[in-house]
Image (cartoon, rainbow, N blue to C red):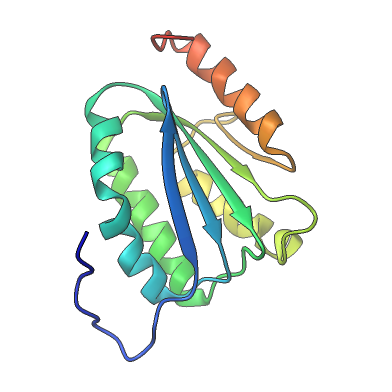
Length: 152
């Protein structure tokens, strides 16, 4: 896929890999992150995200590796994207975020993660943070079963 032209003098900091497993969309992020990363993130993930949104309910699994630290501008961009997603009422019913104790910045970023859940409009209990991916996946699968998602 062709990369869009750069619109900043800074290169993006951070990386993402995207995959899906039935009704779970998984983003694996390796940080730290800056605004330029989130400008590119939408371009790199739009096809799979659009596919999930158009095919019914799904869960979002966000896994952080190395660092989850964000610049202030990156945090603002994430919250704006979350508000945009909420305003469209897309099919994501639950979000699980995984950041184990080995990930840099976990304690510092917890209040930001709570603001992210609120910006997405997630009802109490439909956004959770986990130390282990297996626990997060099991929780997401239970959420999908409760919602009647096919295959759960």
